[in-house]
Image 1 (spheres, rainbow, N blue to C red):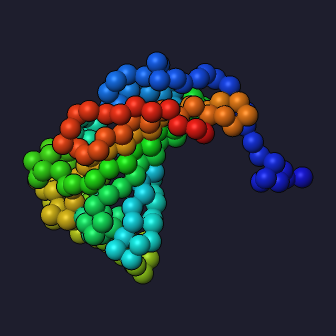
Image 2 (cartoon, helix red, strand yellow; image 1 turned 180 degrees about the vertical axis):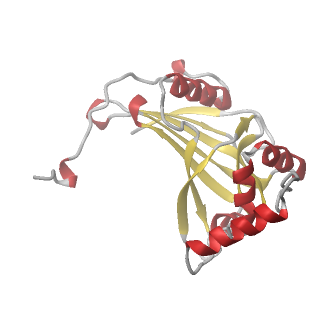
Length: 216
């Protein structure tokens, strides 16, 4: 018999997390956990849940892929006409969540959203596989379509249009950067008494982060 959803649970016992265990800089701490996830063979450690809120006040979430991280923020790329882009252009704040169940870890990032520069978008687009470049032209992301034939027909159209030449970046496609003002690291612990360490700053014009331990 299939187990009841309410009976599904896991006891987290791998390790703890204390203020003394983390680096002063949360981006450096993120890289430490991200590199550990890579070494542990975590599948797609750059996969992150992106939460946005539209002009109508409704939240929306989906999984996207982190493509760059630096002191400036966390970068991902998308269609600027998609729902998530419309949300962020109307309400320029977002939350990112990384979850590494094998390591019993979660990372949350909150902050202001801004478009990356045209040069950054061009450089990343130029590094993508050609099929992905064509795909950026093909998909009217988040818009209703009559069937998959719409996509295959458009794919053939753009493959013909850009035959024997580099694929240019579509004007409706580019990057966003989440500039963090809050980053939280969560380590699972027994009896649901998890460890939570939060970095927070009053505004993104300062490099000073306040470090706190939060109740689970």
